[in-house]
Structures are given as structure tokens and as C-alpha cells.
Length: 360
Image 1 (tube, rainbow, N blue to C red):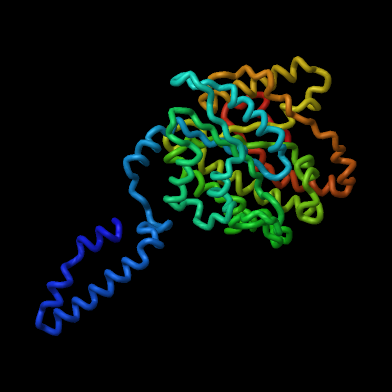
Image 2 (cartoon, helix red, strand yellow):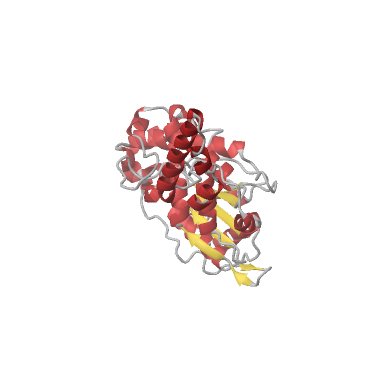
């Protein structure tokens, strides 16, 4: 309602002023003050605040009516599990899809700034991830109702960045995690909300978007070795990473299927089984395994085209000698840490492909 309408629908103050009683003159004075105040602040103050729940208008109902045309794919894994190698594969696979309903290609977005602001607090977004008005604004931006199928990909790792990272995370990496246990980290509010809160993300966005998680697993020692310097020493980095493995596992166990379709909410990629090193010189076996994984992913996403000759063009194999770089003492310690992950990580999927039977 505009200020003009509020003034038009207000009580006729002139009639109250005409009252001879003291009470009438008092009421008139109060109403004049209220109307003047509203008129003064209304242009600068939204009538509906950000923390209020909005009722969808006609445009919003139209925009949110087709959940199937808005898909968010989150490549989910701890730091060091080859996000930047896997996500380009999925992006290439998505870009070759054709929507049978419109015969047009998917609109694919990777590291979308609007979604990142909502998930992580980037661009100084201060509202909470489950703020209803922010969620709807984000959906309108990432999935405009233009008849296209939109696929938005995100792959920020858990944890992500440094404790003094200049990006405006709502919750930054915490120095005290290094001195904690994996259980203490997984239970803490700071870790549960860094870089985003997975549970709140799914609850807030799933009414409007088909959300899919692709979980990454890389052999534990390689995972730790790839980013060991992030937490000063290997032992501390191992504690932090195991804490987030436990946190992610609990999320996966509590969300096996999508609440709206009943389909699997997440699937698993064993990173070592899409790499060259695992197959040695057996290129034919490697290509067959990669194609089986792509076919599985297409089925999981609800897409149609699994043949993808360009999907692995950007894949780069790590040439690091992790065992040599870590040293014998650290390797022995990490083997013991890996044993403590038994039954926790890697997560298990029903009826796994051979390519989903990961080695710890």
C-alpha cells in the first residue's frame, strides 16, 4: 500500500478536530502525528521487511510453478577431493543436454554469483540462508521463467577458504578447529554453518529447485596431502577434514531421497576411478569406466544424453608423489586416522557401480 492510499483510507482528521470534547482533540492530534510520520518514512522503508514471509504474487506463482526447470547441482566434498577437476566434467555434460519439451539446450551456470551470495553470504549478503524473501529473489535470478531448463552448479568445498579469507562468508574457517576432535567439529555451530548450512540450504531451496548432490571421494592420504598447509601441520589438517567428513556423512544419512520426488538426493563419485593413474595403460578400460559413470550421472540427474566425447578434455591428473611429500611419520599417522573413519567415510550407495566402490 502506498502512502497516498494510506492517507486516502485514514480517518477523516478534520472531522475529529471539529469535536468539542477534549478526547476528540487528543485523538485527532495522535492521528495527525501517525499519518505525518508514515508519510515521511514510507519512501525509504519497505513495507515488507526481509525477515518477513512473503505471500507469492501472480508473477511469483508463475515463476515457481515448474520446479523441474530449475536444477541445482552441488558437487559436495571435503577440501582436496578434486572439485575443480570433476565440476568441469559435469558442466560439459550439462551443456550438451537438450530439453525435449522445447528442443533447446539447457541454460548452464557455474559458480553463479546470486546463488553464492545466498549460500555463503558473498557480496555482503547478511540475510540468513533460509530467509524466505532472499530465497525467492535468488530463484527468480538463477532460474527465470523463460521456458528454458536451468542448471546451476556449485562446488565450494567443506571447509572452504582460510580463517582470514577476504570473502564475506557468514562463518569463516575457525582456528580452534585445529585443536579439536572430529566429533567436536562436526557438532559445532560454526562448522555446521561453514561454508553453508547444508540442511537449511536443502529445506529452503528444494520447494523451488530440484537439488542434486554429487559426493566426491578421493583416497584419504591424497586428500590430506593436497591441502595439508591449510591448517599449519598435517595432523591438524587431518582432524579438520575428518570433522567435515563426519558432518557431511550425517547430512547424507538424514537426506537419502528428495522430499518432493522420492528420487535419490545424492550419488557418489570415486575420483580415483575416473583418473588415468588407476587404469595404467589400459585406456579402453578407463574409457569404459568413465562412460558408465557418465551414464549413471545422466540417469541420476534426469537428463538424456550420456555420450560426451569432450567431458574429460579439461581433466588433469595430479603428478604429486603424496607419500614422499608427507614423509613416513605422517603417512603412518594418516593410516591410523583413516582407520578411525571406518563406517563413516566413504559413504555407501545402494547397488553401487564398480566405479562407486571407493578405496579409503
